[in-house]
Length: 143
View 1 (cartoon, rainbow, N blue to C red):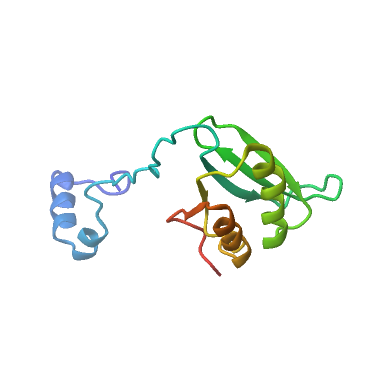
View 2 (view 1 turned 60 degrees about the horizontal axis):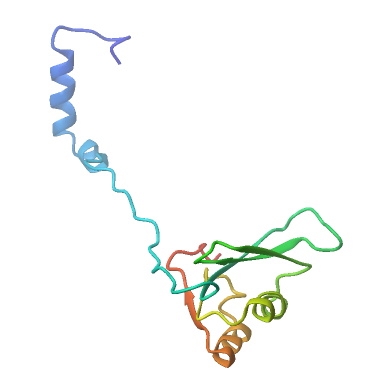
């Protein structure tokens, strides 16, 4: 603004004008808030708490275009399981045969709110295996 207009008290006048402007005050940000990242308790041991999520679609590789990622909260051990589709049954079978069969049943399974993770299939698996299923509070908006 100073490049096109100038007068002796421009800074003071602009400051006064913005302080009395109602739309300016409504749009004003007094303090930038910083949201904490999700806080998770420290697990008691390896493979007790596992986070799972889906990634993809990816470029095809041997007919697979998705991956189920499983991460142990304690050791940060990660597995990427290739999938040809992301139906609830496929995700549940992949998690069971690739994670539970190898590392045992986790006490807690943390997922986002994707439809595969809220499905009756995963709910049933968690009840049968005694897994506490926890969904993150923030998920993608459902369209």
